[in-house]
Structures are given as structure tokens and as C-alpha cells.
Length: 335
Ligand code: KG4
Image 1 (cartoon, rainbow, N blue to C red):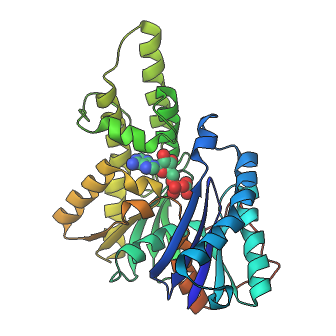
Image 2: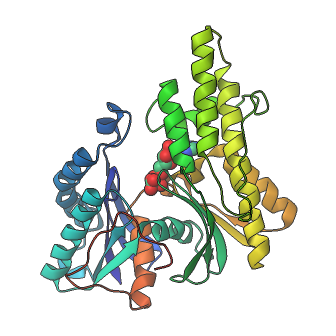
């Protein structure tokens, strides 16, 4: 079964063709990062317009790259939530039109479910159940992946997403947009114990997290140093900040695995590319005898392949939609 998969929830337009869930025939991405870098963050209006410009060109390119024709497409999968509403709508409307014109099923895919599915592409042997730590620019949740299409949120951030923290602090440091990857590189070789940052706990909800205090502490440290004319050691700063984020994520992910009794942990989302978090997870899982799965780096960020992969399992579960499919800015992953 060949699924044409469409992703447009934020600042990447992506179209992929995925065969039988895990075989990626092509994965075409048009990134808008340079456009938004001027503003230091994604401008939703610009994102929507750029998606409109890119989406049909990418779909043609996907067919060209694979040598398939429109008649070879058996279904269309699309991210319908969560994301920037205008941006998601572009993908949903395009997918509806293609599905209608080709007379094939339309499959709505939750974006975070797609991120989780990136692991199935990298690791053909991986099957649910497992726990997945989903960390991106828009959300940070720990998910009990009971089956390919049944999920339960075990814990999550009460305020900012981990990626958002990296981005906001990176923006003040002026080290490039989005700030996560540059912060990661800056912190490599830095001393993670040099600067003290808070690790928040939510009373009575041990798997929940909070990153806003950490973000404020980091920004205050930078601003105070600037006002006093003091120079911070930036690699140590980035390493200490990255360590505080990892220390919030990794023990909770491990606790979630223990709670479910699955013995398997996966990580997903843009922040899953972070070298410190990956290394800390590897160490903790090795110590606890837990099997760890991480997507290859190019599949951590937004892409169409992950939507095509999850779309296949949604299709098998009978989750298709009609032409009344809507887009949603927020949507629980369990729905
Ligand atoms: O999953 P994603 O591509 O988009 C969303 O669905 O949000 O995640 C983007 C986020 C951004 O916040 C970006 O700064 C962060 O992932 N990111 C990283 C790294 N690479 C990307 N954060 C930390 N370390 C990285 N190496």
C-alpha cells in the first residue's frame, strides 16, 4: 500500500511516499527556517503562505523521485493536529483535494503520533507497547504507547515545552534559529555543573514537568551578567542549561517505564536529536536494563515519512476521514 503523506503543521512543508508503513520511498522537505530566522521565531501567516507555495511542487517531486504515477497512490495521510492552525489547514485542504481527485481514503494523523512512528522507520523490529518521551518545540509529554493507535499520556510539561526553552534562550544568545541544535553544539565539551539551574517538581504528579522557571533563571543569568559587564563561559552555560533539561526528562521517562512495566523506551520529536539527552538516556537505560529506541537524527524533526508510517497503522485501525475533516491547533494524542 503506497501512502502519500503530507505534513505542514509548523515551518516545514513535507511530502513523502511510504509503502506498507515502514518503507520510505521518498521524503521531500521544504524548510522555511531561513525565512523565520529573520524574526527569531515562526510567523504563522508567513508559514501558511509558504506551505501554499511549496506543497503541490513537493507532491509532484515525490512522484517524480519514486517513478510512481498518481494511480499508484492508495491513500493520502495528513497531519490534522496539533500545530499552527493556518499551517495545518493548508496540508489538510491539499490532502482532501488529492484524496477526492484520486478517489482514495483520507487518513488523519496526529502530529505527535507521527513523531513516535519515526522510531518504526529507524527500527523495523520495534512494536508497541512501549513508553515514548516526546520532546519537541511545541510539546513535551511522556506517552504510554499501548498499541499503534492507542495512547495514554502519563505526564507532561505544565508550561513550556523543552524545545521552546532551548529556542528562547538561544535567541537571547543570538546563536542561530531555532536555538536547540546550536545550544547543543555550544554545550559540547562545556562543564554541565558550572552554573546552577532549577529542576522543578510538580507535587503529586511525579511524571509532570515544568520548564518556565528554568527558562527564566537562564535568561536572568544572561541579563544580569550583561548588566554587570561580567562574561559568562558560554559553553559551560549551554552545558549546564542542557543538563537541567535532561535531568527533568530522563528520570521521569525511566520512572514511566518502571510504572508501565514495559521495559522498552523510545524518544521522539525535534529535541530527541539532543546529544546530551541521548547520552543520558543511553546510560540510564543500560543501567536499568531497559531497551532504548531513538530515531535517526534526520527523522527527529518534522518530516512526511513519519506521517506516512503512522498513517498506515491508522488506516489498518479503520481511522479514515471524510471531506469534512477539520484541522486543530491542539488535540490530545489519545483521541
Ligand atoms: O519536532 P520539531 O521539529 O517541531 C515541532 O513539532 O515542534 O522540533 C523542533 C524543536 C525546536 O525547538 C528545536 O530547537 C529543537 O526541536 N531541536 C533541538 C535540537 N535539534 C532540534 N533541541 C535540542 N537539541 C537539539 N540538538
